[in-house]
Length: 532
Figure 1: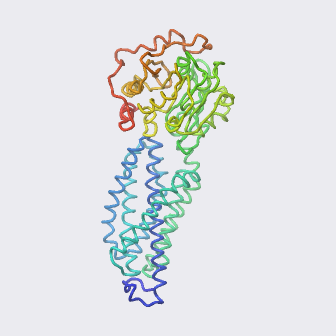
Figure 2: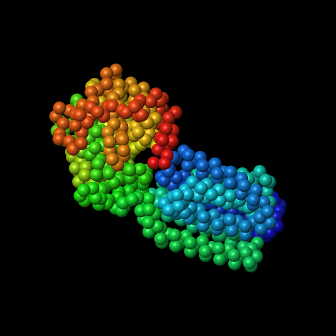
Figure 3: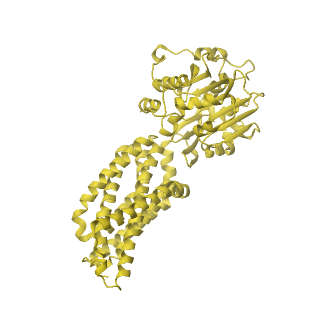
C-alpha cells in the first residue's frame, strides 16, 4: 500500500493490492466507529452530571448539545489547515480529546464543589470537546481518500454510516454499561483511554509512513502523558469523589452511593440545642429529604389528617425512607400499606442502615407493608386495587422527571384508584418560598376532580411547608385528627386548625394547573427556588 499520495480507483488497482486497501479502509472505519461512540459518551456524561448536580435535565441537555453541535461546526472549519498533515493532526486531536473528555466529569465536579463555577465550566468544556470532535471527520475523510480515492458521496456515506452506528453503541453503553459498572467519574476515564488507543493505534499502524520522526516522538510522548494523567485520575478517583462530595455537605457523610436514578447521601452530625442530639439527614441529588431532628413534624402533618376516616388500604407514593410508613403503621386497623418508590436503593438503605431503621421504626419489616419499585405514574396507569388513602410523598417538582408527578393527569390517575370515601394528601412544597409552585399543585389537584383543603406547618429544616388534603367530588374532607390518633409529638387539634390559615402575604394565588404538556409547576419551581 502506498500512502501520502492518492491511490488509483479500485477498479484500476492491481488485484494483489486490493486486500491491503480494504484492510486499511476497514481500520479507518473502525476508528470512526470508536471515536463516534466516545464522542457521544462525552456528551451524555455532561448532560447526566448536570442533571444530578443542577436537576434541570432538559436545560442541561439543551446547553450541552447546542454548544457542542455549534463547536463541532467550528472544529470542522478549523481542521481545514491541518489536512496537509492529516495523520499527525488526527493523532494530536484524539490525544487532547481523550485527555479532556476523560477528565471532564472530574473537572466539572470540582468546579461545582469548590469554585461555584459550574455553568461557565460546563459551557467551556462542551465547546472544547465539540471543537475537537468536529475536527475528526474532515481529517478522517482526507486519510480515507489517501488509502483509496473514491467519489466524495461514497466516502461520506462510509464515514457517516460508521459514525452513526458508533453513536448508537455509545448511547447504549453509557446508561447500561459504563454507569452501572464504573460510575460517572471512572466511566469517563475509561472512555478517554479507549479514545486515545483508537486514535493512536490507527495513526501508528496504517499511517505510520506519513509521520515524520518528530511527529512520531510527539505522538509517543503525548500518549505517555495522557496515559499517566488518566491513570493517576483512576487511582485517585475514589478519594477525590469523597473529598468533593463532603465539600457539598455541612455534616460528615456517612453513606453515599449513586443508584441508577440518583445520588443518595446520608449525613450525620452531633448538634447542640440545649443538649446533644444526633442529626441524621438524607439527601437525594443534593436535595434535603429529612432531618431526624424535626422530621416528625413533617410526617405527622402529612399522614395523620389523611387517615381520619377509612384506612384499611393505604397507598404511599414515594417515601422510600419509611418515615411516612412508620406513622401509618401506628394505626392497628391499617391492613395493608403499598409503597411505590422508583429507587430500590433508597428502600434498601432504609432497611439496612441502623440509625435510619431506628428512625423509621423498622417499618419495612412489618408484614403489612408491600414495596413496589417502579415509576409511580406508570404503576397507577395499570393499577386495579382500590385504596382508602393515598399519600403522595414525592420529590419536589424541580426536575423534568418529577414534574409529571404533580400534574392534572397524575392526580386523575390517583383519583381512579381511590375507594369510595377515599382521601389524597400531597406534599406540596413551601407556600412561603415557592408560593406559585404550591398553589399550582393545589390547582392541579382541584382540576383533576378533587375538593381540596390546603394547609401548612413549620418544619425548621425546610421552613414553612405546605400540603394539600383532598377528596373526590365537591365536598372537601375535614382537616382534623382521627379520634383514635396515637399520641403525637407535634400535631394537635389546635395546631391543625391554624394550619389551614394563610397569612395575607402568602394567601391563595390564582395560578394555572400543571399538565404533562405544560408543566407549569416545573417552570415555577426553577424560578422560585433559585438561590435557596
